[in-house]
Length: 314
Image 1 (cartoon, one colour):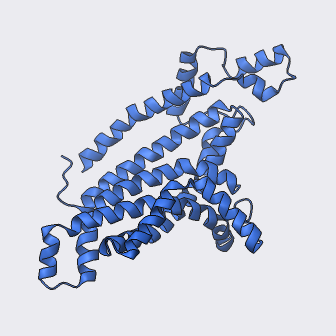
Image 2: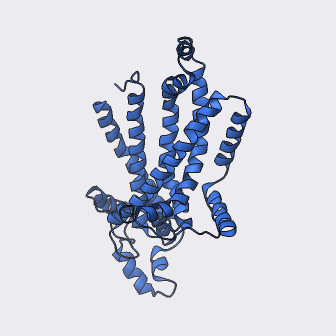
Image 3: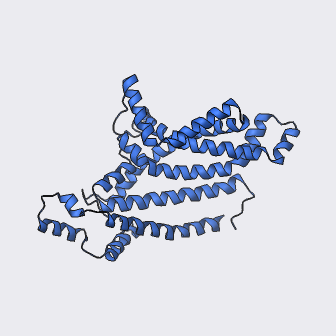
């Protein structure tokens, strides 16, 4: 396992290298003049030229990329073109909010999806199964931003409630923090729950057809023990795969949700950077999110071996 983890860590290098090139070029080919966006339409040609030289925008793409990556490799993601703040500390501070949002959303998703997925598998083709599958189909079909908008409208029109704006740390005020984070986490969690629910149902159904389950039942084991101690444990690997993918996806999906609920997380930081053409902010944020996504996949692979000792990574 140790050698496998080391190999996977080395594989991070070409993946992140490819991501860095992609996002660097994408930000350069987007129409518009960065200097003009920052200074406004009234800026003089001399002021625009000074700003371009200050940020190295007149250099070749190769030189700009080498300068940027040279800083990244030493832990310097550069400074925001808008406010001059260092990008990496800002990313870390905002990522704490996005990470909390993702974790709460994932917990909500697991609490909803896994029990309902198991229930649908056990009650296959019954009214309960059909109802659960219909709910999951709606969850997969409706985008999270649409669900968030409708939810806010319902709360405002029928309950005269609007979620608090801003962010308060959990350590500072736990109740206020949970009040702020619950609704956006619920929106993201429901979207994730739909996919996990469908995977749980199909995976548990497949395991229930296997011979060892019939053997467990023949030995007189209780149905609850058969389902949760034997069937679900052996069905967890595909479920864990989609959970890992969904958690990584939540980091990207939080961009719009954070904007809707006015959360100053990493997603809002990226979106603001894109609209303001803040190259260093977008490049550094996307590279950081990619690193976290790959690390989540590595953790999921390690959990495979823990759940199923037959898996060998040699």
